[in-house]
Length: 289
Image (cartoon, rainbow, N blue to C red; front, top):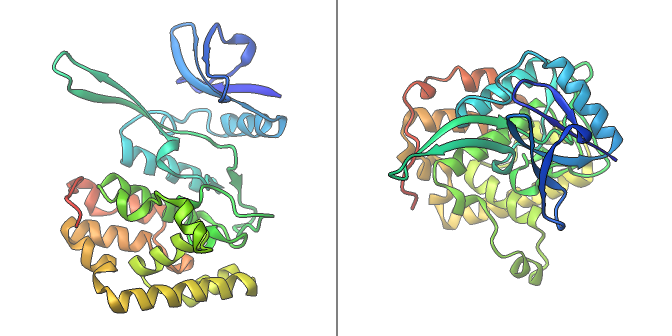
């Protein structure tokens, strides 16, 4: 096993260089100090150590992957990765790391933002979609194609980023599953529940999704989830994002609709996302129904 961490300067530190650390024996993630730098690191296998070295070399001059403000800077980090054909594939709130300060009145100010955890990042070869032995990334934040083992691309990161934006805007209860045991009692997997929710919110499974996934067994599962979602929408039309997203305002609704397209080929690219007018004056928090 090897332990690595990327400091603010972009330097990759080895475990032997870490002078102090605090460890929870139940976890493999540590807080550490080296000189005047504080950072978080984790144990990784040799494969992931080599991957981190490759990333550090390819993005040696980057500041966007470590610093700046939360959502926009996260999007810029994804944009930089995509510009070199890297896919993060695990974009979720847990992997957005924030430094902040607090004054005597309790007011918090964000100072640095980092997109972290590249354990399952990969580089697309010749722009081809990636098929894996199993679904990768966290189920809660996967795209529809990401719930399968087939057809993961840059568009999958954009979908996950869209979910994070909804979460940040106050929509956690729409996205998060709080009682896995109750689902299990009814023979429903978390992936099934998430797919039905997403197709209810963002529209039925598009033909382009089936084309990208390509695996007939998974395509049939996606069709069944989409049919269940359509039945739910017939009873509750307010499930559609076109309805509950109105409170965000037209710009945010337009942006997020593009990110959540169920057809990966028609989904907004990260360049289109970051060039959207919403970032110039978006509304960042609403009261959800």
